Image (cartoon, rainbow, N blue to C red; front, top):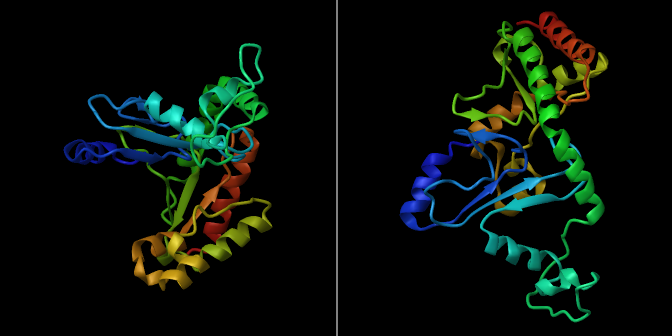
Amino acid sequence: PADMDPIYAIAQRRGLAVIEDAAHALPARYRDRMIGAPQPGFDFPNLVAFSFYATKNLTTGEGGMLTGPPELIDDARVWSLHGMSRDAFKRYTSDGSWRYDVVLPGFKYNMPDIQAAIGLHQLKRLEAMQRRRRAIVAQYDEALGELAEVDRPVERPEVESAWHIYLLRLRPERLRIDRGAFIEELRKRNIGTSVHFIPVHEHTYYRERYGWRPEDFPVAHREFERMLSLPLSPAHTDQDVADVIEAVTEVIRANRA
């Protein structure tokens, strides 16, 4: 999680709402508070959006969750179902009515009941799945920590990471191959990796629309060029993890500068 205390302090002084993109953050914690829970002492709206896409720590296949003040969540429900009045949710129940009204120019992004049912069962498994993620992270940390050619992810003392991704950063000055070649070498060893994520300003639309170049945001571009994500899932066995570690170590040893 981001360092939220300064953000809340600015918002409190200025009377601002805080809206958090927490797509990857379930079930991360910041100063012992789960992301999405109310911030004590903050007097203004705080909305937090989570993703339940297929690759997330808790999934419903697609969709997500919004947390925040009850009155704003009620409004969001109306916006998410064609802008129909709250009574529309009850029109198919025994105590509901056929009559409803459209009170806002809403959209159609409510979560279907089947997805919600999947999410409820995933929620029961979340703690166990997180324990497995942390165990895999510990294995990666121990095995890769002595390799001077890479930087491992760091968990700051005041946070508990969701460990959605295990992001490895290469040190290009210590290797004879670049990130693309490194990924290809892992692929040859049957290890699939990805890159999270391509900076916004390097995508075609934003380059053409705003005239941005990679060097306009040098830190983002530099870090993007050296990062890759190792496999990390509760479904991975210890042998799977060992295979990843062996492959990464082998590629590094074969390509040291």
